[in-house]
Length: 425
Image 1 (cartoon, one colour):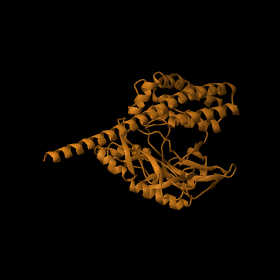
Image 2 (cartoon, helix red, strand yellow):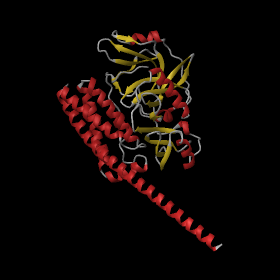
Image 3 (cartoon, helix red, strand yellow):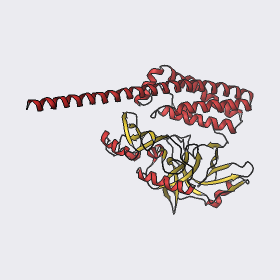
Image 4 (cartoon, one colour):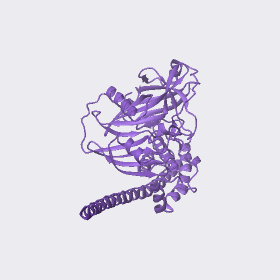
C-alpha cells in the first residue's frame, strides 16, 4: 500500500512538473507575443504621427501654389504610409479607424483632384489632426500601446469625430478591395445582441472550424472579442471571435507554400458562399471579385428586399480571400457585416434602371443591367444607407473599369469608384 502511494505521489509530482513547464512555456510565448505587438504598435504610432506632419506640410504648400503634380504625389505617398501604419494597429479604437478612412480618401483625392479650395479644406482638417491626433499618439506612446493592447476604447482626450469629414468635391475614388469596403461603422454589433457570452471552451469549439488553437486571449474592447492563434493545414493563423456568440470576426492564414491559381471566377464565388455559410453567415450574394497576390478576393453582401425587387447591402459586407485553387481559406473579414447587419425596411425605387443609366457618361460601355444596391454614406459614420442603381462599366476614353452609383430616388450620381486593379463580378 505504501509503495502504491509512493508511486502515485511520484506520478502526480511528475505531472505537476510537466504542467508547470507547459504553463511556463505558454507564459513565455504570450510575453513574447505581447512584446512583438508592443513594438509594432509603438512603431506604427510614430510612423502615423510623422505621416500626418508630412501630409499637412504638403497640403499647405498645395493650397498656396495651386495644382502641383509633385506635391500631389507626395501627399499620396504620405497618406499611403499613414494608412499602412494604421493597418498594423489593434482593433477597437474608433478614432484610429476613422483616421484610416480619412487618409484613404486623401490618397484618392491626391490622385484625381486639383482644386486648391479642396486642398485648403483638407489642410484645415489635417492641421487639426496634426495638433490633436499627433499629441494623442505621442504624449505617452507606452501608455497608448498598453491601452491598445488591452483593447480599451478611445480615451476621453481623443479628437472629436468632426475633424474627419471630407470636403465636398467632384472626384472619383479608387477601389482597392471592393466598393465601400472601408466604410466606417458603428461600434456595436447588432448580429450578436442577445447571444450568450462565450467562454474559452465555446471559443475553442468555434475555432475548430479553422484549425487547432494554441493561444486564446480575451480582449475587453468596446466590442469584446477573443484573439486566437493556431496552426492549420500547413499554415499559422490568427483570428478574432466575438465575445458574444463566438462568431468569427476575422482570420488570417499564412501558408508555408503557395497553391496554383486554377480557380475560375464562378468557382471562387460559389466557394466563398460555402465558406461563409460554414462560418454561420448566409443570405449573401457576390458583389466584387479580384485576383490578388495572396489569392482570389470575393466580397459578399447581404441581400434585402426592396419593393418587388432585391438589393445588395454594401454595409453588410464580408470579404473572403481563397488560395488560387480554392482549397484553403486565406483571409476572412466579417467586420462590416457584424457591425451593420439588421432587418431593413427599404422603399421601392422611384425610377427605373433605364432612367438611372441616363446619368452615366457617354464613354461608358456598361457591363450588364444596373442592379439595386444599398450604399453607405462614408462621410456619415452612423447615417442611413442610400438606395442606388449600381452600374459597372469600362470608360472607353481611359480604359478603366468603373463602378457608378446612381440614386434610385432622383437619378443623381451618388458615388463614382475606379477599380485600381482589374475585377470581375
